[in-house]
Amino acid sequence: MKQLIDRFERSIDYVRLSVTDRCDLRCVYCMPKGFKDFEEPEHWLSFAEIERVIAAFARLGTKRVRITGGEPLVRKDLPQLAARLAALPGIEDLSLSTNATRLAKHAVELHDAGIRRINVSLDSLQSARFKDITGGKLDKVLDGLMAAKTAGFAPIKINMVVMKDVNVDEVETMVDFCIEHGFTLRFIETMPMGDTGRAATDRFVDLHTVKARLAQRFELLPGVMPGGGPARYVQVAGTDLRIGFITPLSQHFCETCNRVRLSVDGTLYMCLGQEHRFELRPLLRAGCTDAELDAAILHAIDLKPERHEFNEKPEQVLRFMSMTGG
Image (cartoon, rainbow, N blue to C red; front, side, top):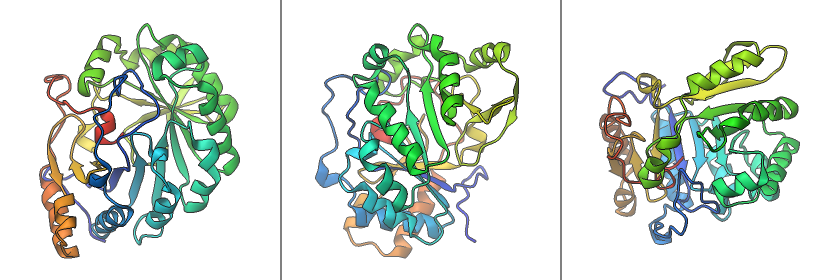
């Protein structure tokens, strides 16, 4: 089996695939209210182009693909694309990140298409606070989550960005919610991505303090979860709940980074915290061969930096998270 290995001996077996930079929410740490500078649809990779790129990654040893956005469910006919990707030789794990506002409508067909794992962004269980953070309606997200549970997705992971003076007081409530429904919970530190991300850094919470707080109420045991992501897990004793901590600032995980991001316009981003990139769309639309596409991906992987510089250079990443792919 081929493997994509970067200059720092890391195996790159995970692609986060953005199918749109658009979203129906406006989370305070991600996209500014009123933002309209989206990629033009004619610049989006078509489903055929996406399938071709992911097939190339699979030939080179990539096994995991996560469909992201923006909000991926605003892209029309997404279950059709999911089915095409799930059928590709070598792709063993197809998952989805979503805000779940449209999940109630699409959960069954997404599961039928071959997606088995989903991550849902949920920063508050209080309706008014949720609206303040996202501009959206909590009920839609909860309906989507229950539809996903009924459809058979497992695991369902809840992603909560923990913010000082915003929602840090809900940490224990979110734990109880996930125990009740059999969800996995992941806490995430804010990152200085674009102006919105940098503005949110004054609300930064070191997740080590959250873990210590939880340990006062729960017995936390070492835990693991399948998947290609960076979370470090514990398990709550006496329950099936696993809690992950994603700590890009307080304890970065660059030495084990196994992923690249493909944006909706065909740009490969090698790191969230750097501007290293490679544009595949011009090659695809110039009629490149499979061998040329494979060679371009190998060259792009050689551009992957050793680590991000969020702490040293928080101002250097100008793009928003939604432009990169979550």
